[in-house]
Amino acid sequence: MTWVIPARSFSCAVVLRTALASANKNLLGQLRKATGYSISHCKKALELHDNDIDEASKWLAAQAQAEGWAKATKLAGRVARQGQLGLSINKDNTQAAILELNCETDFVARNQLFVELVTDLTETCLATSSAVPQSNTSGAGIYKELWNMEQVREIKHADGKTLADKVALSIGLLGENMLLSRAMKMHSVGSDIQLYGYTHPPHSSNRTAGAQGTATFLGKYGAVVAVRSVADKPADAEVLKHLCLQVIGMNPECIGTAEDLEKYPEFAEQQKAEEGEAAAAPAQEDDAPVLKNKTSKDKFLLKQDWLNDEDYTVEQVLQEAGLEVLEFVRMEVGQCSNS
Image 1 (tube, rainbow, N blue to C red):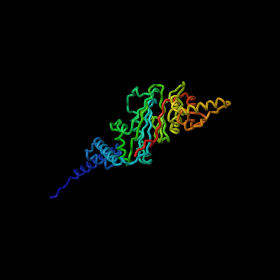
Image 2: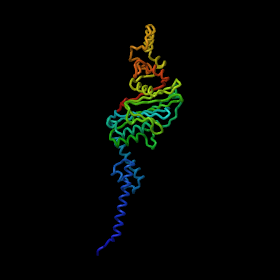
Image 3: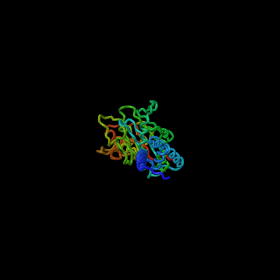
Image 4: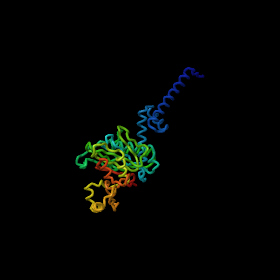
Protein backbone atom coordinates (compact mmCIF):
# COMPACT_ATOMS: atom_id res chain seq x y z
CA MET A 1 0.00 0.00 0.00
CA THR A 2 1.38 3.39 -0.95
CA TRP A 3 0.91 6.38 1.33
CA VAL A 4 0.42 9.71 -0.31
CA ILE A 5 1.22 12.85 1.69
CA PRO A 6 -1.07 15.66 0.71
CA ALA A 7 0.85 18.51 -0.88
CA ARG A 8 -0.75 21.00 1.50
CA SER A 9 0.46 19.10 4.61
CA PHE A 10 3.98 18.80 3.21
CA SER A 11 4.04 22.51 2.46
CA CYS A 12 2.93 23.37 6.02
CA ALA A 13 5.66 21.15 7.50
CA VAL A 14 8.34 22.84 5.40
CA VAL A 15 7.10 26.29 6.38
CA LEU A 16 7.07 25.28 10.08
CA ARG A 17 10.62 23.91 9.93
CA THR A 18 11.79 27.04 8.10
CA ALA A 19 10.15 29.29 10.70
CA LEU A 20 11.71 27.32 13.58
CA ALA A 21 15.13 27.40 11.93
CA SER A 22 14.81 31.15 11.42
CA ALA A 23 13.75 31.66 15.04
CA ASN A 24 16.65 29.52 16.30
CA LYS A 25 19.07 31.42 14.09
CA ASN A 26 17.82 34.73 15.48
CA LEU A 27 18.17 33.48 19.06
CA LEU A 28 21.65 32.19 18.28
CA GLY A 29 22.64 35.57 16.90
CA GLN A 30 21.18 37.40 19.90
CA LEU A 31 22.94 35.12 22.39
CA ARG A 32 26.28 35.37 20.63
CA LYS A 33 26.05 39.16 20.45
CA ALA A 34 25.05 39.43 24.12
CA THR A 35 27.70 37.05 25.50
CA GLY A 36 30.54 37.08 22.98
CA TYR A 37 30.91 33.29 23.12
CA SER A 38 31.39 31.08 20.05
CA ILE A 39 28.51 29.91 17.87
CA SER A 40 29.04 26.29 18.91
CA HIS A 41 28.88 27.18 22.63
CA CYS A 42 25.78 29.34 22.11
CA LYS A 43 24.07 26.61 20.08
CA LYS A 44 24.76 24.03 22.78
CA ALA A 45 23.45 26.38 25.48
CA LEU A 46 20.18 26.97 23.58
CA GLU A 47 19.72 23.25 22.93
CA LEU A 48 20.22 22.41 26.61
CA HIS A 49 17.71 25.04 27.74
CA ASP A 50 14.95 24.72 25.11
CA ASN A 51 15.88 28.00 23.44
CA ASP A 52 15.45 29.97 26.69
CA ILE A 53 17.98 32.75 26.04
CA ASP A 54 18.16 33.90 29.68
CA GLU A 55 18.89 30.42 31.01
CA ALA A 56 21.34 29.82 28.16
CA SER A 57 23.20 33.02 29.08
CA LYS A 58 23.47 31.95 32.72
CA TRP A 59 24.76 28.52 31.71
CA LEU A 60 27.39 30.04 29.41
CA ALA A 61 28.57 32.39 32.17
CA ALA A 62 28.86 29.51 34.65
CA GLN A 63 30.77 27.37 32.13
CA ALA A 64 33.12 30.21 31.26
CA GLN A 65 33.79 30.92 34.95
CA ALA A 66 34.55 27.25 35.63
CA GLU A 67 36.85 27.05 32.62
CA GLY A 68 38.51 30.30 33.67
CA TRP A 69 39.26 29.04 37.18
CA ALA A 70 40.58 25.76 35.75
CA LYS A 71 42.87 27.71 33.42
CA ALA A 72 43.89 30.08 36.22
CA THR A 73 44.85 27.13 38.44
CA LYS A 74 46.87 25.57 35.64
CA LEU A 75 48.79 28.80 34.90
CA ALA A 76 49.18 29.96 38.51
CA GLY A 77 52.90 29.20 38.70
CA ARG A 78 53.89 31.28 35.69
CA VAL A 79 55.65 34.62 36.22
CA ALA A 80 53.51 37.71 35.56
CA ARG A 81 55.45 40.98 35.72
CA GLN A 82 53.93 42.90 32.81
CA GLY A 83 50.55 44.61 33.03
CA GLN A 84 48.85 47.93 33.60
CA LEU A 85 48.08 50.32 36.42
CA GLY A 86 44.55 51.66 36.57
CA LEU A 87 43.86 54.99 38.27
CA SER A 88 40.36 56.36 38.86
CA ILE A 89 39.22 59.60 40.48
CA ASN A 90 35.61 60.51 41.28
CA LYS A 91 33.92 63.58 39.81
CA ASP A 92 34.43 65.84 42.84
CA ASN A 93 38.10 64.83 43.31
CA THR A 94 37.60 63.55 46.86
CA GLN A 95 38.37 59.86 46.24
CA ALA A 96 41.00 58.10 44.13
CA ALA A 97 41.93 54.47 43.55
CA ILE A 98 44.98 52.80 41.99
CA LEU A 99 45.08 49.11 41.05
CA GLU A 100 47.83 46.95 39.55
CA LEU A 101 46.95 43.98 37.36
CA ASN A 102 49.84 41.88 36.07
CA CYS A 103 50.06 39.50 33.13
CA GLU A 104 52.87 37.56 31.45
CA THR A 105 53.49 39.60 28.30
CA ASP A 106 53.23 43.17 27.12
CA PHE A 107 51.20 41.85 24.17
CA VAL A 108 48.34 40.85 26.49
CA ALA A 109 48.79 44.03 28.56
CA ARG A 110 47.88 45.99 25.42
CA ASN A 111 44.94 43.72 24.52
CA GLN A 112 41.59 45.53 24.57
CA LEU A 113 39.98 42.89 26.81
CA PHE A 114 42.79 43.32 29.35
CA VAL A 115 42.52 47.11 29.18
CA GLU A 116 38.76 46.96 29.74
CA LEU A 117 39.29 44.58 32.67
CA VAL A 118 41.79 46.91 34.38
CA THR A 119 39.42 49.85 33.89
CA ASP A 120 36.48 47.89 35.30
CA LEU A 121 38.40 46.59 38.33
CA THR A 122 39.85 50.01 39.15
CA GLU A 123 36.46 51.71 38.99
CA THR A 124 35.08 48.93 41.20
CA CYS A 125 37.74 49.71 43.82
CA LEU A 126 36.84 53.38 43.62
CA ALA A 127 33.15 52.56 44.10
CA THR A 128 33.81 50.20 47.02
CA SER A 129 32.28 51.92 50.02
CA SER A 130 34.18 51.89 53.25
CA ALA A 131 33.94 53.89 56.43
CA VAL A 132 36.77 56.33 57.04
CA PRO A 133 37.86 55.73 60.64
CA GLN A 134 39.03 58.96 62.24
CA SER A 135 41.81 57.08 64.03
CA ASN A 136 43.41 56.24 60.66
CA THR A 137 43.01 59.71 59.20
CA SER A 138 46.22 61.71 58.99
CA GLY A 139 46.45 65.15 60.51
CA ALA A 140 46.42 66.50 56.95
CA GLY A 141 42.90 65.14 56.39
CA ILE A 142 43.84 62.21 54.15
CA TYR A 143 42.91 58.56 54.65
CA LYS A 144 44.65 55.80 52.66
CA GLU A 145 43.23 52.30 52.42
CA LEU A 146 45.74 49.71 51.18
CA TRP A 147 44.67 46.31 49.84
CA ASN A 148 47.22 43.52 49.42
CA MET A 149 46.87 40.65 46.94
CA GLU A 150 44.55 38.59 49.13
CA GLN A 151 42.36 41.54 50.12
CA VAL A 152 41.89 43.01 46.65
CA ARG A 153 40.88 39.61 45.25
CA GLU A 154 37.90 39.49 47.65
CA ILE A 155 36.45 42.89 46.73
CA LYS A 156 32.94 42.49 45.30
CA HIS A 157 32.03 43.67 41.82
CA ALA A 158 28.62 45.21 41.09
CA ASP A 159 27.52 41.89 39.51
CA GLY A 160 28.19 40.01 42.76
CA LYS A 161 31.38 38.29 41.63
CA THR A 162 34.68 38.86 43.39
CA LEU A 163 37.49 40.59 41.52
CA ALA A 164 39.31 37.24 41.59
CA ASP A 165 36.37 35.71 39.66
CA LYS A 166 36.56 38.49 37.06
CA VAL A 167 40.29 37.93 36.58
CA ALA A 168 39.89 34.14 36.34
CA LEU A 169 37.29 34.59 33.61
CA SER A 170 39.72 36.74 31.62
CA ILE A 171 42.51 34.20 32.12
CA GLY A 172 40.25 31.67 30.43
CA LEU A 173 39.72 34.05 27.51
CA LEU A 174 43.28 35.38 27.07
CA GLY A 175 45.26 32.30 28.10
CA GLU A 176 47.88 34.00 30.30
CA ASN A 177 48.42 34.03 34.03
CA MET A 178 47.18 37.25 35.64
CA LEU A 179 47.66 38.57 39.15
CA LEU A 180 45.83 41.26 41.08
CA SER A 181 48.92 42.51 42.89
CA ARG A 182 47.57 45.38 45.00
CA ALA A 183 45.24 48.35 45.16
CA MET A 184 44.93 51.56 47.12
CA LYS A 185 42.09 53.97 47.79
CA MET A 186 42.62 57.50 49.05
CA HIS A 187 39.91 59.68 50.63
CA SER A 188 40.10 63.38 51.36
CA VAL A 189 38.43 64.38 54.62
CA GLY A 190 37.55 68.02 54.20
CA SER A 191 36.07 70.08 51.39
CA ASP A 192 39.26 72.09 50.87
CA ILE A 193 41.37 69.02 49.92
CA GLN A 194 41.40 67.79 46.31
CA LEU A 195 42.91 64.65 44.77
CA TYR A 196 44.49 64.55 41.32
CA GLY A 197 46.15 61.73 39.41
CA TYR A 198 48.04 60.90 36.24
CA THR A 199 49.59 57.87 34.56
CA HIS A 200 52.60 57.54 32.28
CA PRO A 201 52.86 56.75 29.49
CA PRO A 202 49.23 57.79 28.95
CA HIS A 203 47.12 55.00 27.43
CA SER A 204 44.85 55.63 24.44
CA SER A 205 41.86 54.45 26.51
CA ASN A 206 42.32 57.17 29.16
CA ARG A 207 39.16 59.16 29.73
CA THR A 208 38.55 62.28 31.74
CA ALA A 209 34.84 61.63 32.29
CA GLY A 210 33.53 58.09 32.27
CA ALA A 211 30.66 56.53 34.20
CA GLN A 212 29.16 59.02 36.66
CA GLY A 213 31.89 61.55 35.89
CA THR A 214 34.72 59.22 36.93
CA ALA A 215 38.12 59.91 35.35
CA THR A 216 40.09 56.73 34.62
CA PHE A 217 43.68 56.46 33.38
CA LEU A 218 45.94 53.51 32.51
CA GLY A 219 49.72 53.33 32.27
CA LYS A 220 52.90 51.70 33.55
CA TYR A 221 53.43 54.39 36.21
CA GLY A 222 50.87 56.27 38.25
CA ALA A 223 50.70 58.96 40.92
CA VAL A 224 47.98 60.55 43.05
CA VAL A 225 48.56 63.84 44.86
CA ALA A 226 46.42 65.47 47.53
CA VAL A 227 46.58 69.26 47.52
CA ARG A 228 44.98 72.19 49.27
CA SER A 229 44.52 75.55 47.59
CA VAL A 230 45.94 78.37 49.71
CA ALA A 231 45.04 81.08 47.22
CA ASP A 232 41.73 82.49 46.11
CA LYS A 233 41.92 81.01 42.62
CA PRO A 234 41.18 77.66 40.95
CA ALA A 235 43.95 75.07 40.87
CA ASP A 236 46.02 75.10 37.67
CA ALA A 237 45.38 71.78 35.88
CA GLU A 238 48.75 71.87 34.08
CA VAL A 239 50.65 72.42 37.33
CA LEU A 240 48.81 69.48 38.91
CA LYS A 241 49.51 67.24 35.92
CA HIS A 242 53.22 68.08 36.03
CA LEU A 243 53.27 67.63 39.80
CA CYS A 244 52.06 64.04 39.26
CA LEU A 245 54.71 63.57 36.56
CA GLN A 246 57.30 64.95 39.00
CA VAL A 247 56.34 62.27 41.53
CA ILE A 248 56.43 59.58 38.82
CA GLY A 249 59.76 60.66 37.35
CA MET A 250 61.71 61.63 40.47
CA ASN A 251 60.23 59.13 42.95
CA PRO A 252 60.61 61.22 46.13
CA GLU A 253 60.58 59.52 49.52
CA CYS A 254 58.54 62.20 51.28
CA ILE A 255 57.05 65.66 50.81
CA GLY A 256 59.85 67.62 52.47
CA THR A 257 57.97 69.33 55.28
CA ALA A 258 59.79 70.68 58.32
CA GLU A 259 59.05 67.40 60.11
CA ASP A 260 60.50 65.42 57.19
CA LEU A 261 63.68 67.51 57.14
CA GLU A 262 64.27 66.88 60.85
CA LYS A 263 64.69 63.18 60.05
CA TYR A 264 67.67 64.00 57.80
CA PRO A 265 70.02 66.26 59.80
CA GLU A 266 72.72 66.08 57.10
CA PHE A 267 70.34 67.73 54.65
CA ALA A 268 69.38 70.46 57.12
CA GLU A 269 73.06 71.24 57.75
CA GLN A 270 73.79 71.43 54.05
CA GLN A 271 70.78 73.65 53.45
CA LYS A 272 71.96 76.09 56.15
CA ALA A 273 75.42 76.17 54.59
CA GLU A 274 73.95 76.91 51.17
CA GLU A 275 71.74 79.66 52.59
CA GLY A 276 74.75 81.19 54.37
CA GLU A 277 76.81 81.19 51.19
CA ALA A 278 73.94 82.74 49.26
CA ALA A 279 73.50 85.48 51.88
CA ALA A 280 77.23 86.32 51.88
CA ALA A 281 77.51 86.43 48.11
CA PRO A 282 76.45 89.48 46.08
CA ALA A 283 72.79 89.31 45.09
CA GLN A 284 72.25 87.93 41.59
CA GLU A 285 68.92 88.22 39.86
CA ASP A 286 67.23 84.89 39.11
CA ASP A 287 70.14 82.97 40.61
CA ALA A 288 68.64 80.06 42.59
CA PRO A 289 71.08 78.24 44.94
CA VAL A 290 71.97 74.72 43.83
CA LEU A 291 72.64 72.03 46.41
CA LYS A 292 75.80 70.01 46.02
CA ASN A 293 74.29 66.79 47.30
CA LYS A 294 71.65 65.98 44.69
CA THR A 295 70.98 62.55 46.20
CA SER A 296 69.99 64.05 49.54
CA LYS A 297 67.93 66.77 47.89
CA ASP A 298 65.93 64.39 45.73
CA LYS A 299 64.52 62.56 48.74
CA PHE A 300 62.15 65.49 49.23
CA LEU A 301 59.48 66.41 46.70
CA LEU A 302 59.41 70.11 47.58
CA LYS A 303 63.21 70.48 47.35
CA GLN A 304 63.54 68.85 43.93
CA ASP A 305 64.14 70.89 40.80
CA TRP A 306 60.91 71.32 38.84
CA LEU A 307 61.26 69.02 35.83
CA ASN A 308 59.62 71.51 33.48
CA ASP A 309 62.00 74.30 34.48
CA GLU A 310 65.02 73.46 36.64
CA ASP A 311 65.53 77.11 37.52
CA TYR A 312 62.75 76.60 40.07
CA THR A 313 62.11 74.07 42.81
CA VAL A 314 58.81 72.25 43.22
CA GLU A 315 58.21 74.31 46.35
CA GLN A 316 58.61 77.59 44.45
CA VAL A 317 56.26 76.51 41.65
CA LEU A 318 53.58 75.42 44.12
CA GLN A 319 53.88 78.65 46.09
CA GLU A 320 53.36 80.61 42.89
CA ALA A 321 50.33 78.43 42.04
CA GLY A 322 48.90 78.82 45.56
CA LEU A 323 48.98 75.07 46.29
CA GLU A 324 50.07 73.00 49.28
CA VAL A 325 50.91 69.30 48.91
CA LEU A 326 49.50 67.17 51.71
CA GLU A 327 50.14 63.62 50.48
CA PHE A 328 51.21 61.63 47.44
CA VAL A 329 51.25 58.00 46.31
CA ARG A 330 53.37 56.55 43.50
CA MET A 331 53.12 53.08 41.92
CA GLU A 332 54.73 51.33 38.99
CA VAL A 333 54.03 48.03 37.27
CA GLY A 334 56.23 45.20 38.52
CA GLN A 335 57.24 47.00 41.72
CA CYS A 336 55.84 44.10 43.73
CA SER A 337 57.85 41.13 42.51
CA ASN A 338 55.83 37.97 41.90
CA SER A 339 56.73 34.57 40.59
